[in-house]
Length: 162
Image 1 (cartoon, rainbow, N blue to C red):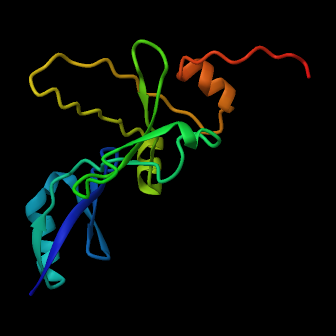
Image 2 (tube, rainbow, N blue to C red):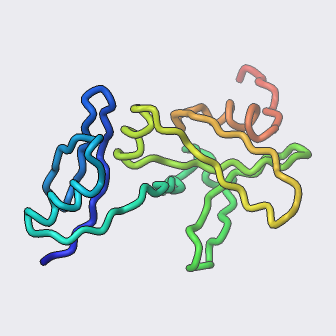
């Protein structure tokens, strides 16, 4: 008997059904009947079962510039550390030295958020005080001058009109 992982695809409380995916096959099962029926149904179609618990689907840093036109200002953390994913950042000029990074979604993650999934932020404090964090959504197409003034705390040279 082949081994399969079962992933709960959606729970529809109005219809009291659970849609599960067993490899490439989908099964609809009455929620009130429970997981034992999912296991039984999988065995009937010739599969062993390992119920897969829901997991977080981690976001990834964008593979590309944070903002077009500001690549020369980027600082890359973990650039030469193969055990980590390099993180491109822009560091602000202000006293708080904000580090701005850009993260992206897979299509599955975009759909999950559009359907109401939340975004979780996990911070490693190592027992120290919690650092202030700001999450934001943007297109990444903001003008470099806007980014410099509003995010990087820079002052633009005066416009001489020439």
